[in-house]
Length: 637
Image (cartoon, rainbow, N blue to C red):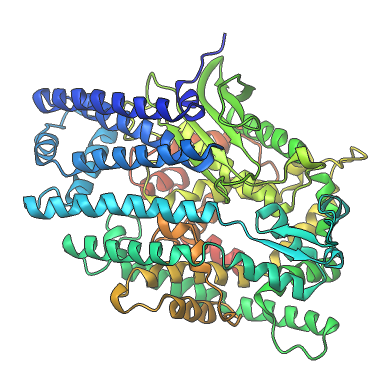
C-alpha cells in the first residue's frame, strides 16, 4: 500500500489546513530551536529550519498552482509569516553564537561546509549588527516577501488576448487552427499563454498579427507591476546599503560562485562580445529572408524573430519544425523522458495515488532497488491564475529517513484540448525542468536537510538542467520515444540531424538575447532607484545586446518574473551553460544512456547536493577545473 503524502495533501487542502500547518510548524520549530540553544545539537537546528521551510515551500506551491483564489491568498499570507520566522532565526545572535561555538573538528566535510555556509549567510543577513539594524532588516525582508509575491501574482493573472481575423492563422498547424475556432463575431482569440503564444509567433504569416500579440505579451502586468517593481528595487537597495554593500547586486552575489557585481558585468561583456560576430551574421540572414516577403524591409523586428528563424531553418537547413511536431506528442515525450532517466540512473518512475490540487496533476514515486527515493508531481498544462512559465518547486527537502518531494509547474499543450503536439523547444523545456527534479531527488540521502536537494550555490543550480537538454539533440535518445502520432514511425535520423543543424542557426542571437536579460536584471539592481528610469534601462540593454530596436511603449520588465526570484542574477543561466557544456564532455555522444558516466555524474555532482562548493563537485567529476573551452567551441561551431 502506497504511503499518502502529507505534503501533497496540504497543498491540495483548503485554507484552514494551511493555516493550521503553519501554526504547528511554528510551534514545533520553536521547540527544536530551544533544544538547539540548550544542547547545541545540529540536528535540532536543522529540524527547526526545515520544519518551517517545508510548510513555507508548500504554501509557495499552493500560491502558484492552487485553483482556488481564497487558498492562494491564504497561502501567500502563510508564506509571508513563515519567511518572517526564518528571517528571525537568521538574525538571532543566540543562534549564531551557538552555531559558531560548535566544535566541528570531528564532523565530516559536508557538515563543516554546511555550517560554515550558514554562518556566512547569517553574517550577510546582519546577525552581527546592532539591535536597531537587525530590526530594520526584519522589516525590509518582510516587505520584500510581500512585494515579491504581489509582483508574481500580478504576472500569473495577467494573460492578455488578441482578437484577430481567422486569416491570422495562416501558416499555423491544423491542430492549432482547430483549437482556435472563430467566435460569433468572426474573430479568433489568441492568448499570451505559452501554448498559444509560441506557435503563433513561430508560424503565423501575418506580421501585423504577430506584432499585436507580441506587444500584448510585453505589456502583461502593466500598469499594476510598475509600483511593485519600483518598490522591490527600493527595498533591495536599502537592505544592501544597510548591510554595508554599495548595491543589491554586490550583496546578492557575495555567496555565489561569481562573487561580485563587477564579475557579473565582466561575464556579461565577455559572453556578449564572444557572440557578437555570430549574432550579426544570424541577423543578416534574417533580414535577407524578410526581404523575400518585403523587399523594402530595413530591419527585423522582435516579433519577426521566431517566424523568420523558423523560415530560414525550413528553407536553408531543410528542417520543418511543423513536420517534427507529430513525433512529439505530450504523453509519448513524458513517458520517454522518464524511461531515459530511468535507464541512465538505474531508477524507475511508478505512478502514485496521491492527493493533488488539480485533476490534471500526476504523481510518481522514484524507486531504486524497491525503495522509494523520492516523489515527483507533474502539473504541466496552463490554466487560469496558475504560474505561467516553467519551474521546479521544492515541496520537501529530503535527508536520511525523509523522502524528498518536488513538483514541475509547466505550461505545455494539454491533451484534453486535442492532440498535444509539442514544439522541439517544449521538449527541451521538459528535459530541463526534469533535470531539476532529478537533482532534488538524488541529493537527499545526507544527514542534513541543509545539505540536501539543490542547496548548491544559486548560480550553479541551472547547470544540471541545461546539461540534460543535450539528450534532446541526440537521435539515439529521441528515437526511443519520438514516434509519429499517426504512423508510429520513429523519428528519422536525418530529421534529427537537420534539427540539430537548424538549431545551430540563430544561437549567436540567442546568446546575446540572454545577455540582454542578464544585463537588464543587473543594471536595475546596480543603479540608484531614486533616479532610475526603468524603461530607459530596458531600451538601453536591449539595443546594446541585441540587434533589435526597442519597440516604444513595451515593458518586458513588468512581466519578467525572474526579477523577483533571481533579482540581479539572470546571468546564472549562461554561467551555468558554460559549466554544462564542460560537464557534457564527460559523456559519450554515441551512447548517452550509458549508466557509467551517468552514475559517476550522479555520485560526484547532483547526488552530493550542497555538501561542497559547486566548483569542487565539478572538479571531482571532470578531474580538473571547469573552463570556457567547450562553450566557446559550441558558440563558434
